[in-house]
Image (cartoon, rainbow, N blue to C red; front, top):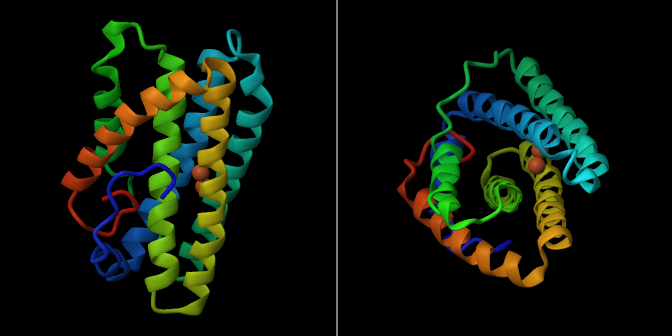
Length: 195
Ligand SMILES: [Fe+2]
Ligand SMILES: [Fe+2]
């Protein structure tokens, strides 16, 4: 699915759905980090890649709106947003990509493709939640968000292709997707979007 090389263990849905409060709290932080990441890309690359400005400013707004949706759901349940996790998945993925930076791979290419992979993994996991959570309301909630994450995957890969060309993107994506699969398969199965 969306370029991912290893599917998530289906038993993750039980682990995640077994502690919905923690799952939703972690999910809220994921949306916030997605917004922050879009803005951070703008801060670093708006000058050299002005074509990013419109799409990533819009993405930052959309991810912020997703945070608001998840936060509202937490409040409706009488819960609170906990402190953010260490985010081992994203950190390991960025570290895995940076192994090659001495070989001259453009940092922007990797930032866009790592973002695409994170969106792709989120999309895959939201699909699992949209099939496996106990209530129709939550399944519908995750189905809608799944569609957004699929669009974000496409956004990042298209931005990368527009700047670096299809061949370079395909080649680098294959390497990074292999590493993403290794990282994802090592994560414990718990009530986190990526863990
Ligand atoms: Fe989102
Ligand atoms: Fe997203």
